[in-house]
Image 1 (cartoon, rainbow over the protein chains, first blue to last red):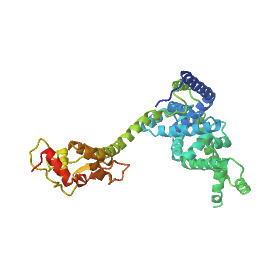
Image 2 (cartoon, rainbow over the protein chains, first blue to last red):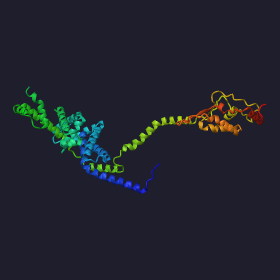
Image 3 (cartoon, each protein chain N blue to C red):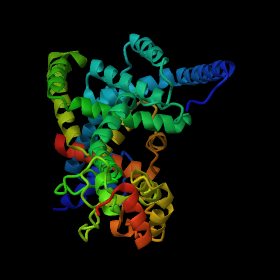
Image 4 (cartoon, rainbow over the protein chains, first blue to last red):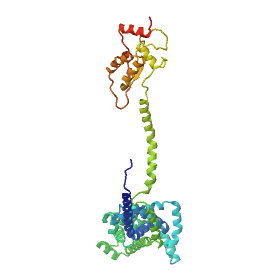
Length: 183
Length: 235
């Protein structure tokens, strides 16, 4: 049996819902620029393609908006966003077709001052990406986040909600593995 | 051989860009080969870092954020925190569950209905007479439409031929007596049945049998002769 509700109460509930939505939207807008860029950079680090990274970042931001009511704490929100962006980027990158497109686009993405540098840079970039793919996901994410401008080990530790010591050891191990593959 | 001992320390120093221990510093001061190795390793790490930084410091194109705002405005129609997947998955899951459990529920209902629809009065097919006729016969009542042959005393088989639920036994007995045209005897008929209460099954309706032998009128000789005279019984 359906419970009777006064029409006024229904309007009141709708208004409260709209107000809550507007508040959430306003709060989310404050994070948008910073977090949108963060999501893009994480995705770009995995995918090496700006267009794909934008798609992934957009999807990650939409998902984070849907969960924003539960993720209002800024540190939790950023941590969640980094993880979801990274995970979505990995999934996106697994598509063979998109990988092929990225390989083609990779040549146009890098700065090319001279022919020698182009060749050397492309070759190094290709080998670097191969080496990156061989790393574990945890190490890879730490490597990407610490490479971002202005992200100290402490900030990365906060983003990933890990102890600083863990981040430091994983970073060291990841760089060592990369160097071994690129030597 | 001496340089091999410092290999790990060299790599560590190159990777960490930190301070070197005193032994390694002393060795590097006198070993040009290790100095070259350290330089090369530091260059490699610098290159890796610079490539990763270049990759990670790229900003999205200017239209990205406005496009993102546009997409978010589409989300405004939905309640934040709700998962849209469940809007589709919820009803689908409900349908699947219904499809899974419907045969079980249906079978259960059929079983219950089957029990409910058990005949309250069951005549043996081989007998070939109506239930009321059999009841009259068992009561020793001769139908006015039938022949004038004498009413035969019950020749009913030992198995009960009439199954009546306990709460209908009284009414059935009254019905039988009324059919026989003997309302006055109804109480006599009813009393034996009432003496055998059957435990009620609350889960499923219990169907108890009525022993027709108990329903028979035991007329004494005077009453029998009166009845014979009234109905024109065999003489």
